[in-house]
Length: 197
Image (cartoon, rainbow, N blue to C red; front, side):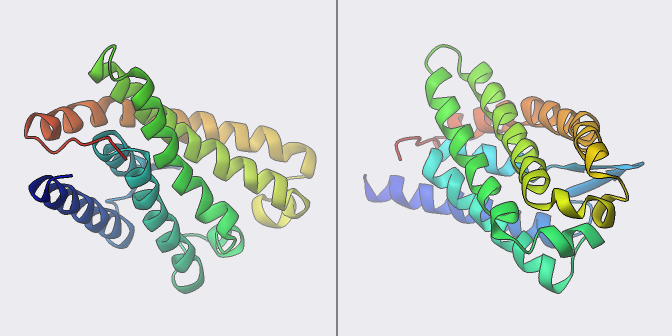
């Protein structure tokens, strides 16, 4: 890789990492409360990294998000639930890394057919990866604590989590699919794209 291209890549990677930190620290930038919902917009940033720089960069940016979430669970949890489940890196870190990997690999599959559609599908898949893995791991690892965590019985936990997927996960996925393509298109037009990793 040429030095100028490497520098450009590092600038974009650093900028996206800084955005992830800001989204996690500044209220309402990474998690937007809308009534009873909390829409997570951070997968948008991870998907932008994955589409522009490739799956490894997406995994790195997603990993930064996950580590910050994991640290927050100990220091300043966003909810009582976060203090109980997000202290487990399988729930807080691993899904966030996989958001970047999935988005990057999906974009690679579709980018040659239709770049914008590929970016939208990649962003949607990345966002859905976060929702399904976090809630799925909570169900698998913490279903014995369903009453303490959610105030529901073990039998009611799966329908409860599926409701969260419908009310939070789908709007987050749609948001990512709408926002990521124009951002990545603008960055690619200015020569910042390098999905070779």
